[in-house]
Image (cartoon, rainbow, N blue to C red; front, side, top):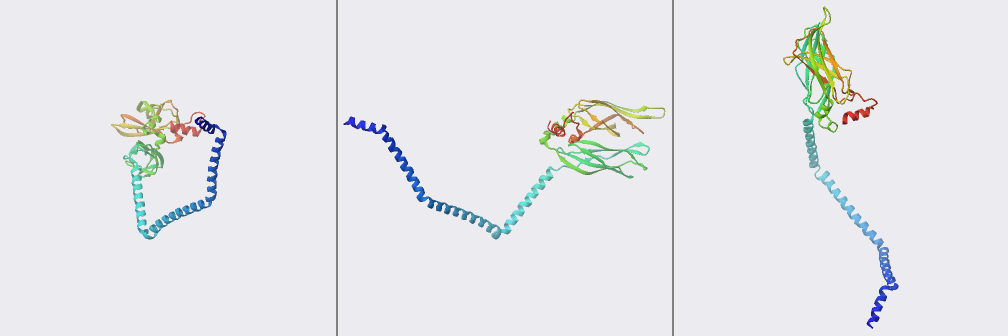
Length: 321
């Protein structure tokens, strides 16, 4: 009998009819779930709608409460708080603007050099103490006989440079003049382009001077002579420039006694030029010569493109290298 019982259990576990019974149970369970959903679907929709309405009404009530509080109960107090916030914000903005704004340009007293035949040269040093700002401007010199023509200029960050007016005619004897700076337009240095500005400047301003000599008298004939400054200038930067300007300042005991200028039409990368600057009229006694180079490295028009280089390619090379 025990053996028959075991045989019956084994038969139930492996007989195909056992598998059919399990499938019928699963189908009955799914049928009951589907039947329950069909019978209760309408009620579930009503419950969901009621929950949605309750949440919507609660949100509306909260919003209404805030509006009533802001515009009916505490309108005046809220307005004062907003005004205070705006005032504080403006004060903070103004303080930040003043803290980061460029400082005014400074300059030294103008010097006047008589060059003979009623002509005068004006010379002043302009100073930009800002490390993150460069400026474009116009300027002129004022003297007792009037004013000079208006010139355009620029100054780089943390730079000192000469401003001049040469061969100014006057029927009156001039001993003093005043520099007038006008129409200053400031430009902030974009460090996303330049990185560390001093290194960016050094990479583009590798202009080397050598063989500087001042000859007070050069005989051109029996009754004609002139003064002359000669020097050699080399462009050791990887950039070529249009129209670099050179201020030639005669010095005596560290004091300027004469000023002249000269310009190269093109200054190629790697090029070396022997430059001559002549002094006509009266020439001062000088013990040394200072030469100051002027190139606006922020102006794309100062750079000469490579052969076949397009403007956009030039701009990318200049302002990303």
